[in-house]
Length: 43
Length: 389
Image (cartoon, chains in turn orange, brown):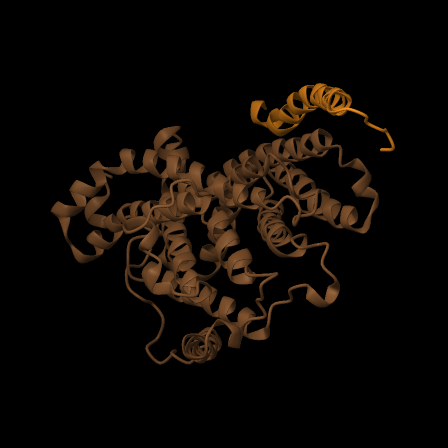
């Protein structure tokens, strides 16, 4: 990414912001994947 | 089940024995060369690349793929999945041989192998990660040896001493899990000392977490892979319990490995985000990184998930092979391919044919010893005198 960081705080805010968004995605994805994995067990 | 070797007596010159014999003879010659002419005579190692495939493959891959021991025994004894009990002994044996071969390979790699016990008994470098790895491997090899001994005692008919060791099973399992947690992660942490040498896509502050998490699914995949080979070549040594439980072990481990691999994929993506390494993904190194991450983590994870859902053993077995290859690729990428990535190509390390030959020799020794033990000791079947355990 071409974002220019002038301070460490800029860098941390940017990377942590992206990480939180990804973690939100993971929180949605992993339970769905778990359902996919175990769906047939309940049959 | 058969407790005696059912092969005819005149079958010594089988293709397996001939190929193995040739490899062992070549390995013997390479061993003599290594210990008479020095490490420089048989390797392409230099001051830029002091660690080659004897560390990258024999040690890092050996330790990761031997993780099946702690994973299986923890699943069976700590988490109470008794349906995996028949997989414990083969997994412990594989782990024990894996670690024994790691130490065996280290004798070739270090300059003065007779000093290998020094960090444990003579001069403890307590601030060094390598000391922690050495101590854990030393202790865990001992634990695995003790965990393996009941099979040997049953074979030798030493009932009383076997009873004593069997009573230690739980404490040994707990000790094994703790030691594995420590040194599997520390092997990754070793590379954190070289942030300028390892490519940023592979370097991360979470390297120790990556190594530990990946060791779990490496161990499970190795148990499935080894089970597949055992069913193909040593089926006559298995009892009904082993035959009956094997599919459950494979599907259970496939499901667990799939979930852990997806978790691993997630923390790898988080690692890229935390270090803001997205721009590297558009480079050649990035393409290679994505081959590893998508081709050898995401793909087998999906294959495992589908195999587990559909109860498709072929799919699970292919996923296991693919995952084992992925672990080897990951460890080689970190220790060799992406290490010293900034050096000109003339200074890059390429293993010599003799290094590769020595590694093949060491793996072959492991296969021969595994075959020797499984054809004699109750590894793939329960000894009739000890059925209650």
